[in-house]
Length: 384
Figure 1: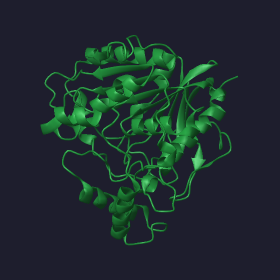
Figure 2: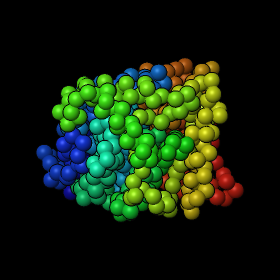
Figure 3: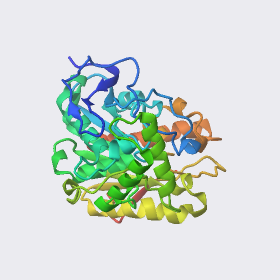
């Protein structure tokens, strides 16, 4: 008999500072807790002016946990969600990503993942292990493959989904030869396709600056000092018109293959870049998000492309980065203070939850989302 309900803060791994994660015994400590696990150490989100305040979760370096919503049943499709946040902020335990409604309405198991961020997740040191946060995510997917049947899920019907940095991570795993059996479909929301992983020279230069500013042994420095140095690196490396965070994916021989060609749902919002630099939003949206996403869609055998065009009437933010997220998960109460939804008609919000969840659900169940593939006349579905 499968477990049914919501299971928060399930530990999927442990990791020492700047070391690769290691697996823990299956369902270590039981099937879950009343509250989400701790978030990775992080500064305030740079998109709080768009998304609103986060949930204020406790932060700790011991943060490798996931959350499961299981509606009951067996052989169900599985959605594994990787949050965005520029590899710097966010958590799988945020109320924004509560999977209860999506799991129940979609008859699927929904899983959200918390992974290491910033310098603690993506600092590169020559001779050291790169992309620790990505390794965390891969370990979480292996946990899913080994354990999801206990929650009624089918390990051979897993869709990996991510938004922004989470989409970059999902794309990296499409390229990784060790991820072939871990997921069979992928959803890439607001993929910053114009942001390339650092080469080793760039990553080393960032690390040198970070260690100079830290002024202490990185293995023993207080977490607060790590975050302070990380913030100063971000300020010194910021460039006009760029969204690349100081700590992010680093080129790796395992990530050089062409992406695995599996069914893909991919799209952007109409005004992605208004969340970052409103004065050059249209050009930057095309350069950083839209063009590269459509190029990737064209390279896939079965890709379905979309564009999210809706925004509240008169909103200066328009259909900005993150605006589709409330409608994917449907927990509108968690987004009540989001500036990007300010002034919206409640009827519009309810309509959009139905309009967005329906194609996501059918895709996760192994079908077309309800519109033509991208290579059939380069068709893009619009949500408005």
